[in-house]
Length: 340
Image (cartoon, rainbow, N blue to C red; front, side, top):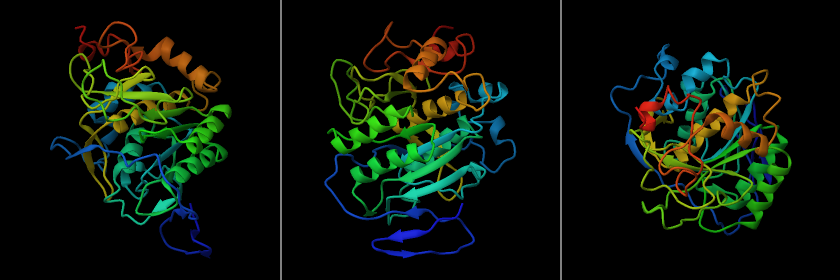
């Protein structure tokens, strides 16, 4: 992929040996979305290096619990699927991506990815769930550039126009944005499902509600976070409200670190790409659900019928929605579901 770099009113085209993102800049505005807050830790010692040829035989626990190994065995690897990652930018040169970051459009910039490491981690989980899916990187965080709300709005619209099949947004803020809401509606009306983090303002109390947008919007799939323990307990930070649809692994998640290697992060930001990666795998072109999943409604129908596991209290709840999403059947995941 080769891109021009556009800053302000001047346009400069650079030819370099490595691919460069397209940087889009114009006006600024007041923003409703805040930079994601996650907990970071070094990768644990037992995790394999991503350059190891056996990496996909020894995936992190989170993607295993979501069914990554079984998906690949079933031929559901995301081939032909375009996944938009609207985030803080992706390190396309990380060897773990195997060249699957196919396009980069940055509406914000100015901060090295070593600091803005969130997007690389998010995209890494999607890649491990659906290794043949194409990652489309839309950067909306950084020290400089357009306003964040404008960046997110334009990223959503461009992702749809670029032919992306599903959008991951591990981001949010306490206030609804009309601008972002219109873009969300645009994606929804163009049959592009959006998987969005429920938010990390939770107080470990299911009786209180915490709000984060755009996850509160009915057009998106809102994802809460659970831990990698028996029964899959809700993460203490995960927002609870009636709009939470499902849950994914969101505590101590291993994924890619800019510059190479792995690191751990915790947040609903980490739960969301597990689900988005599962969706991308299910949407594999020529696969079982190629002609079935056509929009948000048909996606939910497939997930609800086949791949949701009730956890926590019986039935829907405000912390995990309808339950934990995984490609594993109940017998394969019974230990972590607490039913052994």
